Image 1 (tube, rainbow, N blue to C red):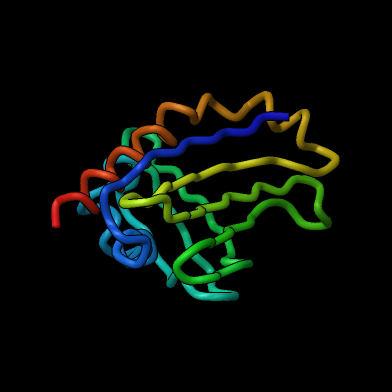
Image 2 (cartoon, rainbow, N blue to C red):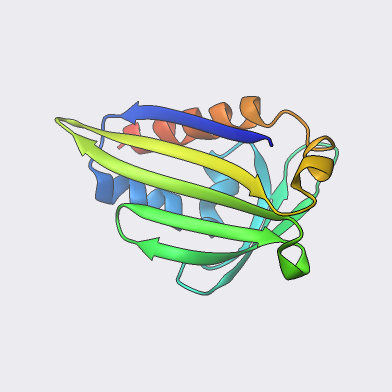
Length: 139
């Protein structure tokens, strides 16, 4: 099964990074990997992320965990658990920095089959982390 992981150290308080991360309507202003995001980063809410670039694909998810300013989990996929993607955003404080980590894992009966059609998202994950770092360290 495919999975992706990116992390970066950010010279900013976790609360500041969290505020940027959870203000979804502002993502396109600092995050080059998305063109638009609808919805609210709050427990149980639906969020749709529209990718930048030619594809403009939309990914609907639900916020299934929200522990400010430490962890947010999004989940989406097919009915009956046939295919499920889970994206985890985590922040941890270490000395004078915040460590940001974003991961995505796929599960379900069709995960192996569908996983073959998922492109390599690692470059986009790394770009997202660097964009967040730049935005958080501007202030």
